Image (cartoon, rainbow, N blue to C red; front, top):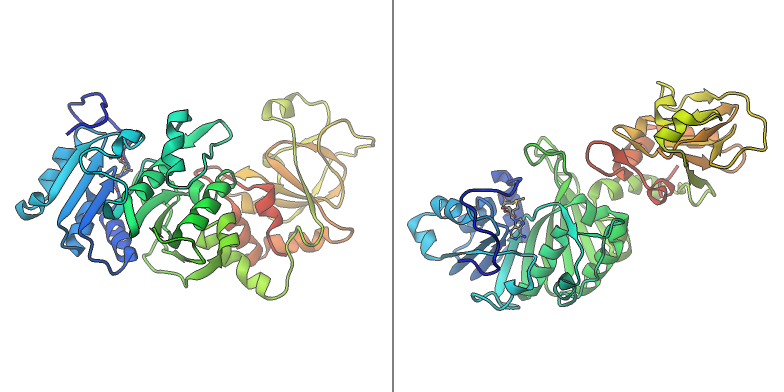
Length: 404
Ligand SMILES: C[S@@+](CC[C@H](N)C(=O)[O-])C[C@H]1O[C@@H](n2cnc3c(N)ncnc32)[C@H](O)[C@@H]1O
């Protein structure tokens, strides 16, 4: 049944990264002991999550929603006649407020909502504001003024689940650790109980490098602490880490908190605490090519991680821009393997490209910082602090949090 007027499609037209079967089981296991009566799958696709739910729970009603015209038939084909009797599919747009109040989808009417939403952004429109507001969430946009579609799915799920009910979601890295979405995480943690965040292996979805997480939220907030878990590519689980609301607002990925913890416990201090000051270079790659000054870009890092760099002799005062001088530590800001690109300036000077961060440390400390950043612990911290798909990037704030 169509309730929000998307175009008619004869076959599947939306690109889709279906969950592998094992992920459906992980999600349902993580929701934990429950005997739900009404379950909703938002953006059901071929129904991997719904099928995992039906294999665990004896529900009186399973509602599936997808904008794609082909999804309804696909999921119906996968159900046994007994399961089909308790199933209702709605063709609808989750981005529309109309989702509420139609066909029995009312606020608080579901025991459990499961979802693996699409990981993309859409243009912000004021029509999206009420969807976020009624779930107690702020309107956060990316730097380009776009809004993550997955954020709207979370808000819709929170609105539709009953008080005390649970959400089992598969969400992308941006919502879990992106700096721009920290206000969203804060509101989510303060209004609702974020119980668990399970970091999945990269490439959990065929054909994409996206870093995704299973997130379990109970509508019985606020959160006090969040259990962070991580599953490795070989299927093994790492020891969980529990973090408080402040730490979870900063980031909710196990990799980041696990890497920072052992060092912090041994009384070491972060780069910020030792007084390191970070500055991002300013030259674009085109400006690097055109510059008459000596320049330093990610391609100029020495092969050996942590080696010294000898820049052309440069007499001050320097022209505008961010310059590296002897004693500065240089770290790649953007690179596929940015943890390998750490160097100490031994002599000379150069203007930095915007893909390089300069760390200016208190006198005589640069050497120690390079040794720390290139040690196995430092490398693990850099890897954990870097974000993104393909080319990875690190923010100045995440770099300064590294303990050395
Ligand atoms: C990443 S796939 C997940 C499919 C399935 N739940 C799974 O885990 O395998 C996202 C699904 O959301 C659907 N979708 C995308 N945008 C939507 C929207 N605005 N409203 C409803 N469904 C949407 C897509 O058609 C697709 O089936």
